[in-house]
Image (cartoon, rainbow, N blue to C red):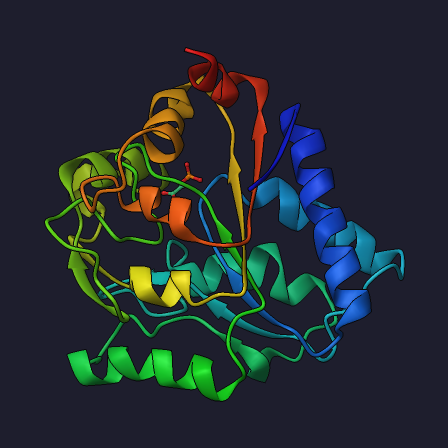
Length: 241
Ligand code: PGA
């Protein structure tokens, strides 16, 4: 595992540099993308690099990790809306190549088909991840097994509480989401995880220094052959404990 530590802004800059290299080496690459507070600065950096002509998304294909059940792409808290407003509408990407799991009218079978689509596109070259306070990746919440494929999941109270800041209140946060499975994430050729803030120090330590267990879903990354972890000093402080 490659580990990079610095300030939050420099973490975003260094992550953006990984994308600049990848997109220049492989303009047709497939990116697995994420939402939430963690990637916001990275997307700002990527938009700036694209505007400066240092990278292009013209031939890139993207697959997002997850979407809330019940929200369509016009809902301001949907992840499709987030991606459009933070990245896709601001760079030269072909929107028809951008994929976010559909939040409405989806059956289990349709959700699992997302994995087939990713495979047909050649598989994910670089999967971006944050980590939830409970160790979730995507919306794979702690449970007694590692879910393999894209599926519907009930959100835990802790996740709904953490995400309430984006909604009018905790009750407004959807109770379920569609998420890539842990197997989908592990199939990516490379994983880039960004973790910032002292509030993530404990879970970062449990994920990378504790036992591999589905009760800390991110711990499975200990078995991934190519993970880059970019974190700030505050998040890293738990690793020294
Ligand atoms: P955050 O979420 O970036 O909003 O902290 C991370 C996650 O839940 O994966």
